[in-house]
Image (cartoon, rainbow, N blue to C red; front, side, top):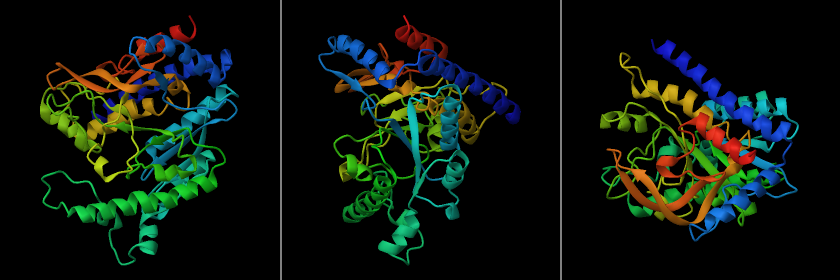
Length: 388
């Protein structure tokens, strides 16, 4: 039964992806727009909308008129979502000569010898590989006798974790990963790329991002987004912390344990640069960029968190991984200042949080109103905005 459910999920996913490409083809091929034209249309309406907020709305992704918009995909493992995203770039090339965004390369902190498929994806899609194996780097520059460098540099722990090391050790571990290793990886990125990076897709990258990765463009850092395997509209009413933060199927299990959800949605979130030790407890706290229609298990079909994660990867993650190659993410804007955004508690009651709000085209789409939950309607609104 699980195989049948996954097959149905795959078909549903393919239909959703087709709809996104249909609008993309209309923009970049049929109407032959340039990205700067789409951006200017958004800026005009954002100027009007910002009057109601008393703050400006700025593009999520920066662009220069005479430079390609470039995307780096970061990952550390199987690269299944990263490969799907690379495949969508090829799909866009099949229907337009005017690809809105260019896949600049794939970045990994693990080598093929350590079961990372980055090099195979690069070979398949003829994409540059930027690779610095963390374990090899650690053995060369930090401690050649350490058997588990990943564990030895872990710096995030829950408050009540008995294994929580002294703060001085946390600082040292943070410095090794963020200041030293990522500076070295950033030097490789600068050496192997010819134009600035506009956006970064985190697709299974197992370290937090920091600005040392882009020291060559400190004044205009790339936008970063990441897929998350749970619905991040749910927050704690008092602390405002995300109810379902976490990694892989663990976040889904938290949703299952709450006993209140029939549908399990994944999220696309903005990722902040973690340059300070004070930021280590703010994981998954960026603005919510999109929310999928989600996976709804059948009533007669028991599913584990891993089953739901497998289905969510096909239905939700692949959907998110199409937004960059098709250029639709260029319609996303964000307020310069925090404004009230509606989230919800576990019972569905509204919780107001002040944060930078997301705008998609001519609609405010933040918190519980995030774009993507009703793709048919959301694409129609997008089309009507672009082609009135």
